[in-house]
Amino acid sequence: MPIGEGNISWHAVFRALGELTSKPRLILELRDKAGILTSVEWLRERNLAR
Image 1: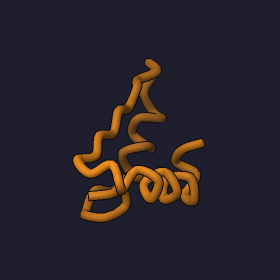
Image 2: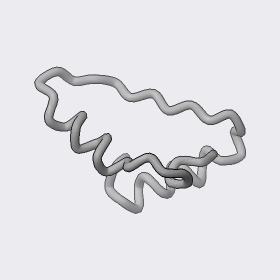
Image 3: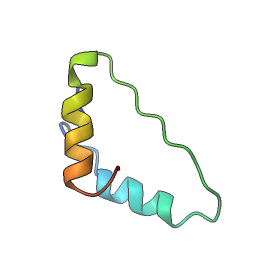
């Protein structure tokens, strides 16, 4: 499923990561590579990715 579909609260995930004192890496994997660009667009539109 592309990022933004489903029921994960991505804003809450990124907010929690932003509160950490370390600099974690977040790796998102999609089963279907056709959803990659849609996922990137969704994250960028919400200022969750550059």
